[in-house]
Length: 125
Image (cartoon, rainbow, N blue to C red; front, side, top):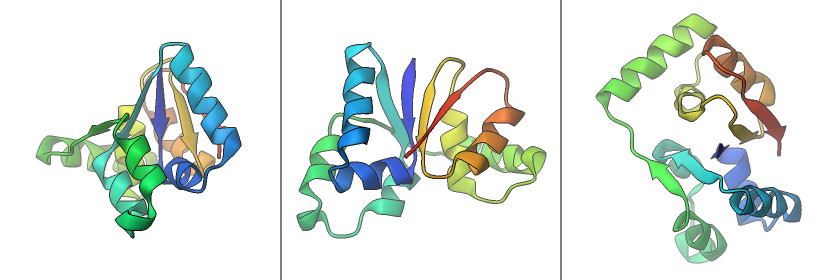
């Protein structure tokens, strides 16, 4: 199982949200990897000197890079789902059956993950 994080989850980490910190800690204790994609970091990174908590957290997260093939796959997923947010598509593409997706946009991500095969649990942050 992975914990897949969108921008809302990273913002919650940056703001020291205890609920999200607890969910991530429980996931790690259960052996989950914590993953996100580089464009999500771009959505939340503003003032590095003031985002020490986020910087420390990201050092322990598997941040996936995005290449041309990923971009094409995201576009195809958006077409199948009738959606338009490429970063959301990239996040949805990280999920695998049994993963938990921590998101501030549960409806948007559920639409995208629903187009793919497999059951993903969505946790609203």
